[in-house]
Amino acid sequence: MNTIFFDLDGTLLPMDAKSFEHAYFNGLCKVLPELAPDHLIKSVWAGTKAMINNDGSTTNRLAFADTFSKLTGIDFFEAEPRFEEYYRTGFQDCIHACQPTELSRNIVHILQEKGYKVVIATNPLFPQIATYSRLNWLGLSPEEFSLVTTYENSHYAKPNPAYYQEICQKLSLNPADCLMVGNDAAEDGAALKIGMPVLLVTDCLMNTNNIPTDSFMEKTLGEVLEWAKQLPACL
Image (cartoon, rainbow, N blue to C red; front, side, top):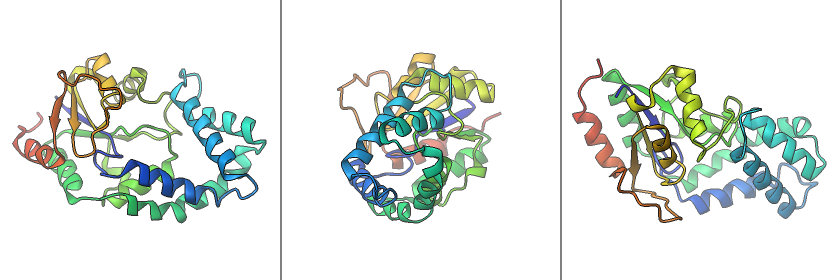
């Protein structure tokens, strides 16, 4: 093992998913007041579904933009500066639905000090500015990682195993030499389908489909820190 993939939301960044979603949409609806909130929310979810179903023929950003524009009649690219302004400002209030912890920063830095590559393999449904913000809430910077997946640089999304394959191809990695650390049995567990071992963090565990977890390691975030301390140096 030479590379560790980390999910962000609910893994390195503990959160109440429902509270985060509420805070996110509450702020986002102020960005396009010309759209009824229900219409905006439904259009964003439809765009999200388009990214999840992306077949690799375009970036997730373009897949989202196409669906959003068709459903709202608003050119996404013309509205994009307003979205970016939201991520710089109102989106920052979403930190209150999260529980940033020093555990995450310590885990990442211990692994890096031991010579492991660390990838932020968060589901690439958000733009770079939003993903980088969530890293900053943890006291981490994007420059510290081999790759941070965002909707601009990804052509697939979880739970499609091709999402993990794309990262491995970009970084010339063998999936068997990596470990996916996440909190969602379906989304993060999909890495197992390309031969990548999976560790589920149980603090904010998600397993709505009751997927058997026998094939996964399971640890709390605190236990992941102890595990990282005990790992041998990566040669």
